[in-house]
Amino acid sequence: MARSLSATDYGAFMEKFSLLPHSSSQHLPLASLTFAVKDIFDVEGHVTGFGNPDWARTHSAASATAPAVLSMLEAGATCVGKTVMDEMAYSINGENVHYGTPRNPCAADRVPGGSSSGSAVAVGATLSDFSLGKFLLSFFRSTDTGGSVRVPASYCGIYGFRPSHGLVSTSGVTPMAQSFDTVGWFARDPVILKKVGKVLLQLQDDHNASRVDQLIVAEDCFDLVNIPPRQLKDVLTTSVEKLYGSQIIRYTNLGDFIESKLPNLKVFMNTTGGAKEDNIPPSLAALSTAMRLLQRHEFKNNHGEWVESVKPSLGPGISERVWEAVRSTDENITVCRSLRGELRAALDDLLGDFSILAMPTVPGPPPKLQTDPTTLESFRAKAFSLLSVSGVSGLCQVSIPLGTYEDLPVAVSLVAKHGSDGFLLSFVETLHKALKEECILS
Image 1 (cartoon, one colour):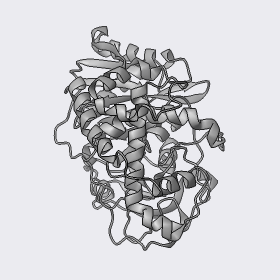
Image 2 (cartoon, one colour; image 1 turned 90 degrees about the vertical axis):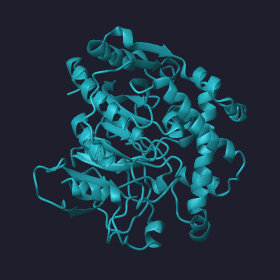
Image 3 (cartoon, helix red, strand yellow; image 1 turned 180 degrees about the vertical axis):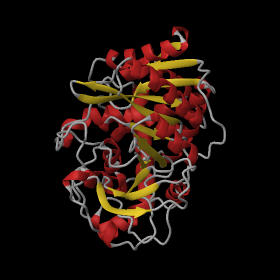
Image 4 (cartoon, one colour; image 1 turned 180 degrees about the horizontal axis):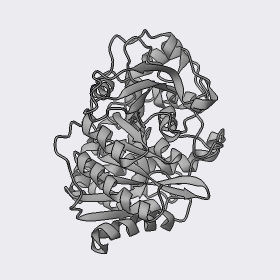
């Protein structure tokens, strides 16, 4: 597959091309906007490379374009190409040994985050208006399974939205693990983020955020970050108080809440050896374990036969994870599946229609490039404990940039009830104005 190596594109693109909108009308919701798609989406006439040259070599060009991509074109946007991703979507770092690592526009010596690395970089570097990832717009389209949109959004200082699981079609998208796969998107500002969301989610009503019952701050989650927690919490709560008053702010221990509502988590409580020393709440560590077990199981069902047959060349870290998945057993998979519904019901009940859960997106700023994977084990464990909350429950989540700490981008995440995507998008748009007044965002 041809690969653009131009220094001006930050290494974000696998290939550049132009797919024009289906109509030139300027009245369409995404008219004049450009977007790129992660190399996991089918585009007619192009090979979907899934981040790996052996995959590209053994697969034919797509015969049709993914519905999610078509919906962007029908709404007036122009697709400008496909972006680099982590191999087989099996990493949150954003480094690709075959195609190179897209350069983080906020910090050139730091990883861009994955697996939707190129999509996030393209938006952050103003190479497109938005992008799609999986969990996937200036916008880029992408996908999010274990954190593939939320993580790079945080690392690249942009907005990243993971919709409620099952609301956006994943047809024409190479699966990773269907219980978690979602089509997400990136944007530099919440106005475009919401415009794209209205199209993808087929929102008819113009949701507003005039009513917010509670902002529930997960204090134990903020204790996991490697920067002063108040750097994130105070900026958020001060802005929310200006908009809605201090009476709506509530603090909770999310780990305790989840443990009390999900008795089946005890199955995994004793398998989280390093959690105690990393100060990860046991229930969140167990939730992360369950998510990764089910993810491996579904990855194996989807791609195990191909991996064993082709024995693809895979980069460090990813090779170990892929083969671990292929050799995994079906133990406790039934319990893992049951936890998804139990956690969704518990969090939906906690949040109701008009409350929002606040937590860090990841444990801190982006790690340095080419860091030894063993030194990142604690960071990854904390990250997946945070990412598993929306991952397992399927609730909608948005990562919003909160400026920088020691010149590195930091972010916070907001989570809303499953199906309350329109409400969450509107809240973020309203909140952005208050954050700007705090001189946090440009």
